[in-house]
Length: 302
Image 1 (cartoon, rainbow, N blue to C red):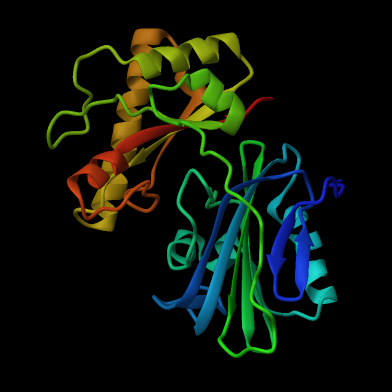
Image 2: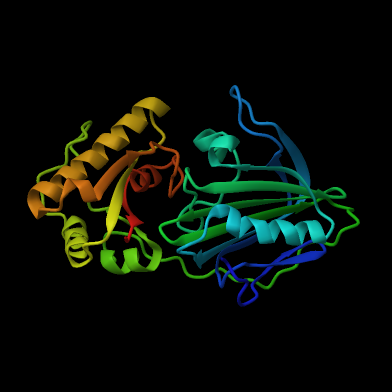
């Protein structure tokens, strides 16, 4: 059972939400005037029902240690607080019922590492109060919980604008130059960004890879841990081909982890998500290079 602990405020019109667990603010931003699309139904038949609202937008993202929590357990107390403050829940859904990854990538979600959405373990909620809208995205993965709230208050609204003193926490260093074991212990994930693939290929260049060596050391020291290698691409090319390429590159990393370092393949799953989880913009060479990567994610410590 989740118990509400130290109070962390997620400011919003006429309500400050209490996080269900002690949390760290990873992102806090405000835009004076913008348009924002709120999902009002699941993604079906190539379309997402939505409401577009203009006004002052605030976004805050929280990360918390939640080893035994489900997305619903984190969302439910926040939903109850909204309803008690007079917000009407217009739409709520869970991962597959929302439309899976198609829904996830149609809505506005802060990028990793500030916000992380597990495509098999997330919840969404949209609520309205007078002419203001607020939405919650809640996800759990590898013992971590993430909550994003976006609130839009139109100009001239009877509700006051959002005022918050929250400050973003420093983002963890998830690159291969950081200590992989420390990153996995702190966040449950790390980027293996020193991996190099043959041009136009999914085969790794013959080289030493300190990130894979560090991952192997971590797995040998923690025999109960299993992980997933997740491949990512830039946005050049089609979705299906990039999904396949990213999966095969993750497969290549697993093969090297098993063949060179003796890690049983059964402890390492592989997935490919193509260009659907970028770390940077795809309209610059530097951004595309950053997005072409393989990440390791802790999947079990049992």
